[in-house]
Image 1 (spheres, one colour):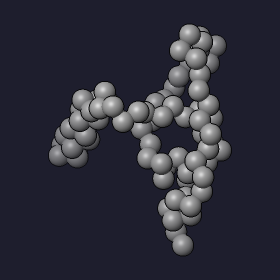
Image 2: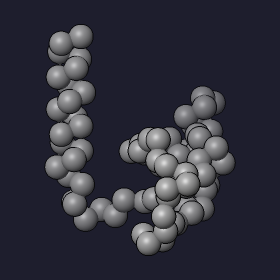
Image 3: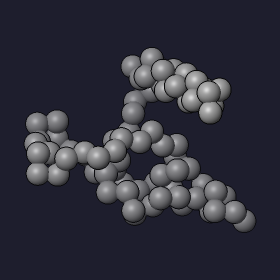
Image 4: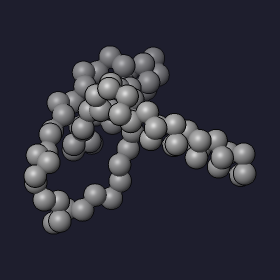
Length: 77
């Protein structure tokens, strides 16, 4: 069994939701990641906060732009 297979069988960690009104000035964001459920299971408790993205297509343009940027980088690199 691979790490990926093991990760698929683990339950997802409970997401910790931060209020939109809460300030983060004392703890600035350093990264934002788009992860699959398998990624989240593999990372487990090392993730401190998870903000699920609803499947409402509001992020489709962002995801398309990221895909294009990755493809452009592969083509030039």
